[in-house]
Image (cartoon, rainbow, N blue to C red; front, side, top):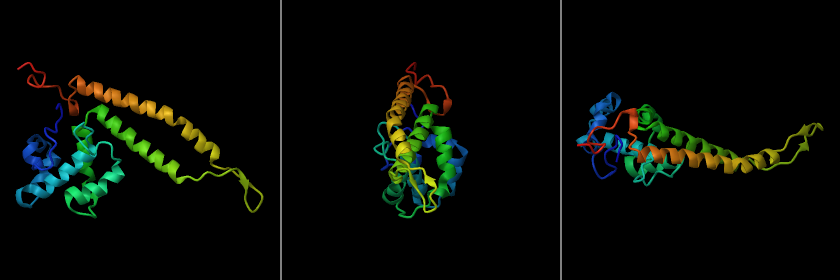
Length: 189
């Protein structure tokens, strides 16, 4: 696996399985501030962040939209049903900017917007042009919704292009965070 995340196994302590994360100041400070036994609390939160953000093929959460994943990860993994994700938004941001590659970030952002778009479509009712109580014309939503639905194929084609770029970068040994592969990662030594 050519990622900063060395292993994806939530049964393990995140910090022991991925000690390289302690080299990033914000993660180290977060870990050091954890007073739980074995740094278990911060470990579970870091696993939740990794599962939320990482599109690695081994991640069973990779296809779950963020807004659906957050409450489930909070309850099932962190163990706090009403966990406040805003309290760790800085850590999520650091994970996105320092751990994910540019193709991963682009793919993640595109999928977020695609999910937001789908929610907008789902929550918009079809209406026809009509008149209000004062006789003024009111524009309906039917034409706009039909256009959005017709454009869906184009948007999914863009998504497939982004996924192909991401997969190609992974195949070529692209390393997250913009660093170059070490000699051992390249198979030289």
